[in-house]
Length: 187
Image 1 (spheres, helix red, strand yellow):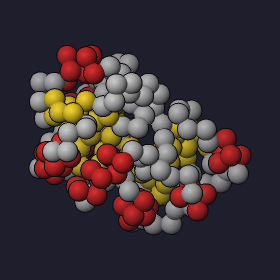
Image 2 (tube, one colour; image 1 turned 180 degrees about the horizontal axis):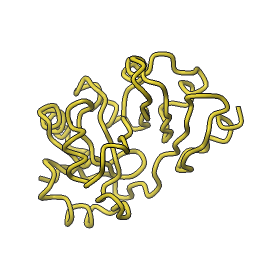
Image 3 (spheres, rainbow, N blue to C red; image 1 turned 60 degrees about the horizontal axis):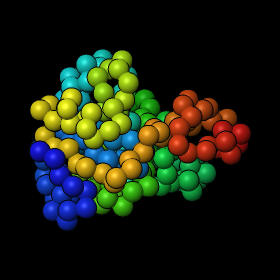
């Protein structure tokens, strides 16, 4: 099923599907992402991508959801969000780290509120293959494998988020992406 991001009913449909354990292809504020509810859809995403469990997925969250997952988030990070900036932080429960991003997209933020939980997100591809960036390529490869694909804007992003490790100072740039994190990495 392919839905349009601009259709008012799309958010309700996606919210229901992923809360029930479904997987969606969503237009993120960076590139399209394979998405599933945090704590519920990780295995489905790993199976779909053929990815092993040693490489965790990033999590899209609202600021409040990020705080619930991570506890103390440095103010310099909070002041940057929402943005195409993914940050590796220590989990609040002490069980390791998590890569979190607060997306700069009203559609995604509203979806996160409706779902009431963070959402795993990963590039649309099979592990080891290049990310699929066009809706045509995504539909051809994944339409039969996911519950829903949401069509984004005419020109969807082509660059993933910037990834930094903020588990210690100074922060470390892991992947340069759409967001200029030079001020954070030098801090």
